[in-house]
Image 1 (cartoon, rainbow, N blue to C red):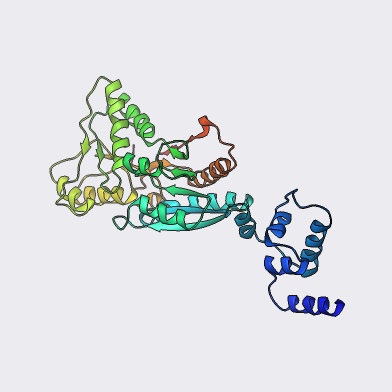
Image 2 (cartoon, rainbow, N blue to C red; image 1 turned 90 degrees about the horizontal axis):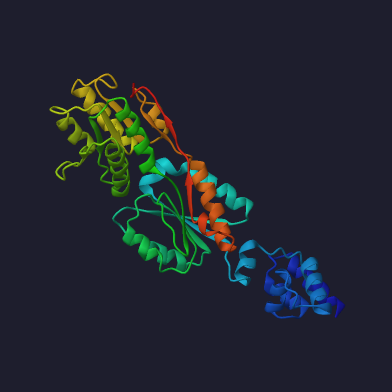
Length: 343
């Protein structure tokens, strides 16, 4: 008997030890080993001692995923990010991963390509792969898409959209308020010719920008008619702006993305419109490229790292049933950064 146990020990040392090996060595069921590993008080006395001795003797080290499965949890969070937003999401991912590491969660990254699949289909496939929760970076979700997400019985945190429900929380920066405050300041200076350029890739951002500008105009007793749509026949912002600026110029133009701001910058130059002397330019979303072009483009610094870290913290609270109703929608602050494209 002693010889057989020694032979077992030698065999165990030659291969990776599993929970099955521990159960076999201790002469108990897998369920019993699982309960001991996860700290259950159900297993007591000699049985617990046998399992603990087997674990120590064999050198078995349960991993987080195995423990999670025993508890009907995978300790894995899915992060969904559109490919088109990679320019803005590097720091978001870093913040999220740092908090996930502290809380011992694994993060599974999924990317989406616009027009390839519906967000609800993507989430459904992710949930089938067994995750504890889903974090979505998407500032362009429509209300109908958000309504579809409500049907899933799994915690979801949305970065970028202000929305909440029983199983949905959000972490966001209030773009509408940012534009409102900026436009209000310009109106107080006497600047009236203000235009918000449509972002065809992000209808939600366009709507929020236009709403913010309209609110500022309304408070000043004015009507906002400066939402500039890009006609369907133009495939790029640059081609439209180059043609548009042959006959139009404004005191202030607002763009959502850096690529749109660059298009305005180049079109203005080619049409002999000096920025900021003849026209001022502000880009809402700040990136490192806004300070690399000339003139440098004024924009709003958004706490990208915090968007990621706070969203992961909100997710862990949801998983542990610690979130409060007033914590369903977390608004982060922004900082307007004036540069060379404004006076």
